Amino acid sequence: MRNMGVAVAVVLLCWAGLAAEKFIVGSDIAWPPFEWVSAKGDYLGFDLDVMRMIAVLEGYEIEIQAIAFDSIIPAVIAGQIDIGASGFTITAERAQVVDFSSPYWVSDQMVLVRADSGLNIITALMPGKKVGAQRGTTGAFWVEDNLIAQGVAVELVLYETYPEAIMDLLAGRIHAVIQDQAPSEQAVRQYPGQLLIAGIIKTYEEFGFLVAKGDPKKILPRIERGMQKLRETGAWDNLVSAYFGNPLEVIEAAWEACISILTVERDPVRYAACLAAKVQELRK
Amino acid sequence: MTLVFRWAWLPRLTQGLALTLELTALSMALGAVLGVMLALARVYAKGPLLPFYGLASAYVHFFRGTPLLVQLMALYYGLPSLGIKLHPFTAGLLALTLNTAAYQAEYFRGAIQSVKSGQMLAARALGLTRLQAIRYVILPQALRLAIPPWSNELVYMLKGSAVVYLVGVLDLMGQAKTIAAREFRNFEVYIVVALFYLALVFVFTVVLRWVERRTHIPGLALPGRA
Image 1 (cartoon, rainbow over the protein chains, first blue to last red):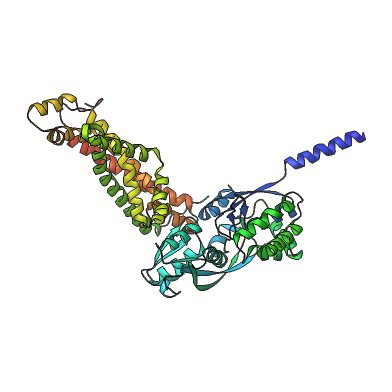
Image 2: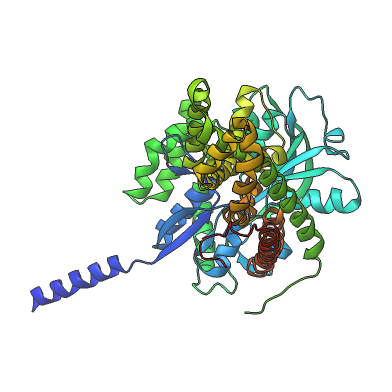
């Protein structure tokens, strides 16, 4: 009888293992430091690590899928992916079609120009200037609503990905790029002496993770609980200190060294501490 | 699920449509000029002109053997490293033209070769030079024979031109993507855009069939046609 009980337990455990819930997380993985593909081909970034850590804390699996930014919300609506984690600003327009988590980040928009262009935030956004932005982002919407719709005839050039906009700015085909603060600063860090932050547009945007309208899979409460645990344990602050204000190569090396603590030992708190410490150590 | 269509989309889609038409018309016209030259080189370059045969063949093989998208990306994002910065529209037009020229070259070659070889002999016997024979005897017939495959290529390029949205051209596809990114009415926007393309294809097909009938020469019937 006892053997029988063990057998049943084993079978149940296996079944539970097989049937582990799995959510598909969609992200536009070309937007460091929130999400990017490392030199070795891993998906890194603040958003993605938060998703991984919450998944461990809340006991579900995730699969990260790279998709174009402007396709994420349609894919969530269509049910092809479960969670959108890609630095999404919570806007009224978006909130009509998807549900957002509580805000996890606050950002303003920044205007990037070439260092040798001599443009400032006023001259870079004057009529006739070519302003690059990623399609479907709040930066692009800002240009449409606050410049073009107001009669300031800048030429808005839209890109599929953020790095393409930066490439075109460096190539001199556009005059400025408008994008959120952290990725803008990251771009300047990546091209020192070539790019310059011409100015900040105080938009005070709050980022949220998003799921299908009505949250049919009841994911949001688990994300909220997970975020709270991360904040209470200090893991959140460690993650922030590791991911923001550091060169990508340093973060990649630290991630490489620590990630097994999360994936194998399944300990988010120690993982975040490891990551923060390693980044500090490598920067010296 | 409720479908929502907005009249406000039309001005932007119409702008996109104009760009799509412009790109298609220009690339098809330029591609035809280049294509005829390539086809002539592939058929008639002999003796001292043989290098032209080699060049034309290499061109056709290269541009038919690589994806249009790869060609576009290379032109737009690759050339700046050589100091050549093309405007999105120019890059798109160039990629479409170079690509369609290779395909059109093959259509024209087939048409030229389907003009019976006796005609060249007869033309030469009447005292025409080789060049005159090509200009006044072969090409007038070959170009007519090329109309059906050429209209096929036109329809293909009209739809294929949609790839230019990837380098920031606000063609029909680019405008649709931009509207969809803002309003999340992807299904509806793309239905409208599909209808736009469909209508264009219909118009082109009818016009070209008319041209084919108008230029038809009795006795030079296409197989399967009365």
